[in-house]
Length: 95
Image 1 (cartoon, rainbow, N blue to C red):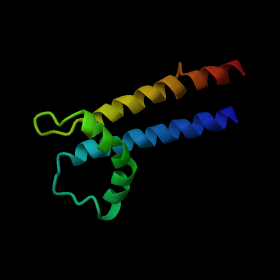
Image 2: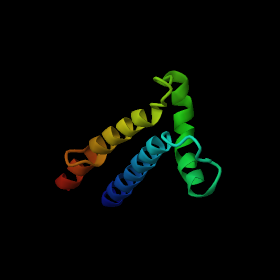
Image 3: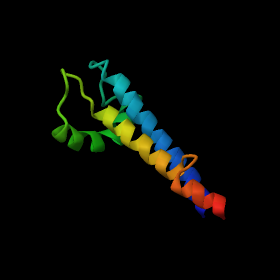
Image 4: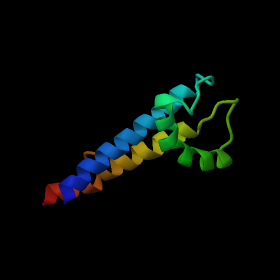
């Protein structure tokens, strides 16, 4: 059970980081329609987290920095849980 959790959590957090990185790139292209095609999926996975964060962290110089905050948070979480010295990784070593 623990190896499956380790794998799924690792892939899930990596996917989530990737979606936030795509959102960072999309901030450079404001003409992208979030309701069309592939971009809808990116917005679907990220907007529920970015919208409340925008109420706390205002844009800096007109640039939305909340995706950067979430990339940092998710990357830190991934490292603490499933990284080389992460909690779940260390539990797997001891088993």
